[in-house]
Amino acid sequence: MSYDNPWKLAVQTYLRPFFAFFFPGIEEDIDWSREPRFLDKELLQVLPESEVGTRFADMLIAVHRRSGGEAWVLIHIEIQASKDSTFDERMWVYRYKIFDLFRRPLASLAILADADASWRPDHYQAELWGCRARLDFPIAKLIDFEPELDSLEASDNPFALIVAAHLRALRTSPDSVVRKEFKVTLV
Picture 1: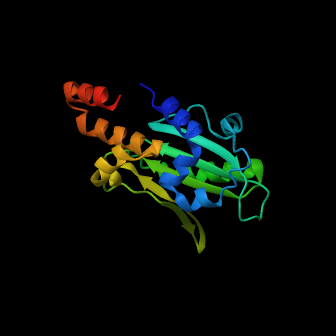
Picture 2: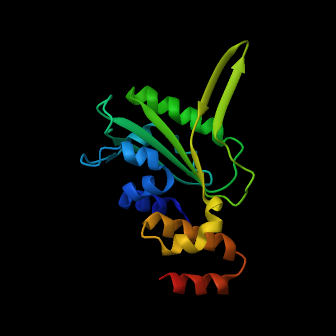
């Protein structure tokens, strides 16, 4: 089953709650009176078709900022489903390709939806002979919300419920009967 479309649909449908839940500082700086633009076709120009891997979704969004400055800026979101040793480098590569195409300010954000508590890539760095390139990017690790499961399920933010459902799915993956019971309860 591909998780790509449900995650993209959820982010597109609940964009503001997505930012409010995962990146509240960004949500506060977006001018929500101006419609965000999803740049899926433009993102396809940057991302090779062969690179599908185990990601949930790649998204590129143009937004206007409340704080002024540039008229519009870009937000690249990667939702990664499993541990990948090249994830940090991919974030770097996609960032420079997106910047090369648009020449606009760009924020790169990552949602890590895997079950490995120790895997937390949050930067890419390369260095040769004193020449250094580094990209730091904010991450949200879904399993970090596990202790808040009850409050997630009671929240009115749709992304709290999505994260709760994801966590329950991780918890019940080996037991299809329990997973089915949870799905029925959720609905």
